[in-house]
Every structure is written in C-alpha cells, then in structure tokens.
Amino acid sequence: MILNGIREVQLYDKHMKTIIFTEKAPAPIGPYNQAVLTGNTLYTSGQIAINPATGELVTDSIETETKQVMENLKAVLAATNMTFENVIKSTIFISDMNDFTAINSIYGAYFDEKSAPARETVQVAGLPKNVNVEISMIAVQ
Figure (cartoon, rainbow, N blue to C red):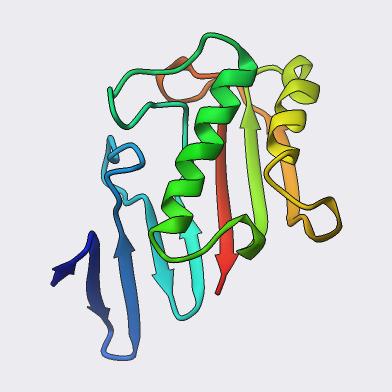
C-alpha cells in the first residue's frame, strides 16, 4: 500500500518496515530505496549530489556538492517528519581526504554541535557517478 509516498511492507509476520520515498530527493538508481523506517528508526540510503528537480549532478564545487547531498538527506528525513536533530549516526564517504575540511564545514552547518550525531568519514577509491561525497544516516523518532 502506498500513501503519500510511503509504502508499507510486512516482513516475517513479526516485523514491519516502511519504505520511504519522496519526490523531493533523487529517485533510487538501483535496487534500493531512499530510506527504510522500522519501528522508530530510519535508515537512509547514501545520498549523492543529484538535484531531484533536474536529475543532474551538482558538482560545481565540493561545497555545492555537499550542500546538495545534505538537502537531499533533509528531504528524506522530512518525509518521515524528522529533522537533523533526530540523526544519531552518519557515515561520510569521500573520494579525496583533502576535501574533508570543506565537506565538514557544510555538513556541520546542519547540526547543533552539542547534539551532533556519531560519525565516521572514510576515503574511498570511487563513488557512484564519480561524485566526490556520499552520506548516509540513521535517525530515531
């Protein structure tokens, strides 16, 4: 059943998972969903800098790329009536550790430093569509 972009799927007769989809974030480009809500915990898929309105990558600079990623995550969180205040864990994948400071500056602007989530940042050999940054999150209602 799909209602307001949210699809409910019953699993194993004991667990309910809710598939999250919003047109305000990029549509998945593979066999995954934007996010899955189980109980009161939301698991987002990694977001890259695709502008959901145009379907185009935003890679003018590492700052604009990171901002687009965070705006995409903001839209996914909003689809479940959550904000960055609900985020308890983030994972940041970057293609070049030299971009860490710029990425961290943009990322940090979305959080109150006193209640920021746990996080790891790792450099990887490659990311989808050759982007420079991908971020996923776990949030709790």
